Image 1 (cartoon, one colour):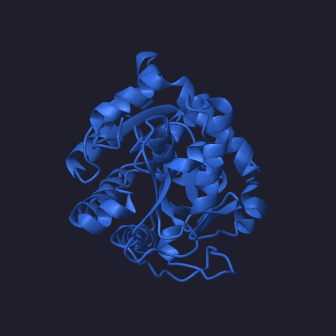
Image 2: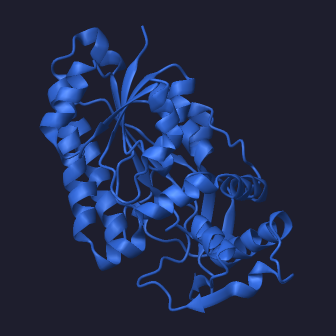
Length: 343
């Protein structure tokens, strides 16, 4: 029997990538998305048109809607990708992050708890709730060391604090109500269909428009980058092979300073789409005031996921993955125009 799963935030960047993977793996996928500014139906329209995905517009905090969706479609697993995720926006407007990431996750957990109680024992054995989170909940690192599943939670931004709270809710609902919950934490994602507020697509968009490429501070902050397809495969492994009540970290083992990332974007664009005036896109780099409370470094040790789940990265080389990503943006101008129209 084809398994039915609910992917929340499935019209977003990471959620839509996972949705595509789930369809490829034979799942019947239901996507619940509020379609806020970063949710774009164009990310999964082709799947909807082929009846491979059923879309429901709604809020994860709407318990009645979620319960009805779970029960009507005999959902056996929930993958929670829905989140407000932009740090800058959380600094200027933290309330939306608390509502979606904390209260929304609470509503989703309660809806799943209600649904789970109606399932027979055999179905309960295979039911899962996978809560997808970030490495930012662990705070920041110095020049050495890595985050692991055992790292302490020390969030420093309203965004990471709201995600940390949602992680704690998920863990508590497992411990208290014995729900089959798994938590995943990942490093910075990149790849196709990322909303242009994030670093890489923003740099691509600004460069192509001949605009300044704003880099925070001196560009020395370090991030570990994982391709969104690798991350999605990791979440799939957690769903299918993970231990209930456990957590798994997924990283790209590709640490780069922000400035190095921007310079690489420029170098690849110089090759793939040279500027008409013959100069490098790197001349557009501009340093701006640093972000408030800007964490210095994130990096994940994903040894547990590799050893226990068999996780491995297809994109071992960040620069190769980045070049494929930039080529995708250049080849998908209609997608770019559709996303820009939502801004």
